[in-house]
Image (cartoon, rainbow, N blue to C red):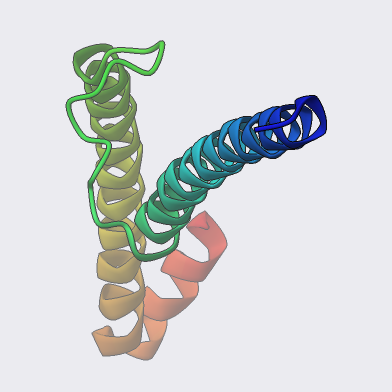
Length: 113
């Protein structure tokens, strides 16, 4: 084998090595991109369809704290709505009495209101 043949063989071998390294980099890049795209896709599906995939994961705020705030807020809203319902029941009862009473009592009830 001549020096030129040996140099040519070395050059081909070097090109193959570089090509293999480039392919490894490309393969790893594609793999990482696929993983990131899959995670992003799953996160979008979870958010879009409320699948609950992230339930139980630590995302900065614990679910217990979030639920506790929600429960106290719900209790407050229930109390407000209960008071409103009681007020409306009293008003309906007054209106029923006014409607069913004779004319004299009707006039007095209207004057009292």
